[in-house]
Image 1 (cartoon, rainbow, N blue to C red):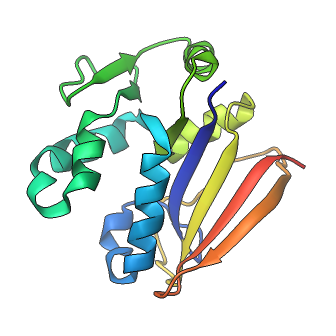
Image 2: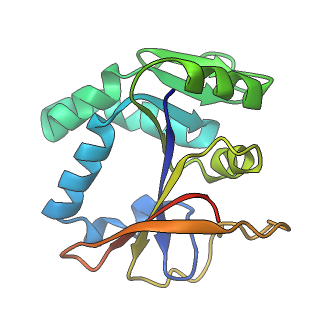
Length: 182
């Protein structure tokens, strides 16, 4: 059975919205290596519509600049969860329109490597409610953004997790890896 790994960029004040606007100065060689390993340990991407649209607009034109990482992003199977997206034109993309927990559970039952959720906080939070996320990797950036969508701001239920790994990067970003409900 495959695991689902959720990897999220987050500011010190909990903002996850538009990380491209505030995370770039904190991207370092060791963080790039970490993200490459994370992608290479996965054989599928699971994305919400907004993240999918952002990735689909950027990654197809990035192979010359980003090399193997971009090639991998463009060739992996991608599953996008959306009730409004009609077509997913990015290479190897499939839209999941309904019965999301059941469809994701089916993907988990397939053999293979991890399924990686990049960003897609709304999707990931809904999958947590159905106990479908196996690992959460919060990449905490040393910045207070001030405004923007905050992670878990509308959660009413307490969710205990077990910290299984921490890793600090040269830029001050810290990866906090959690598993399961505590």
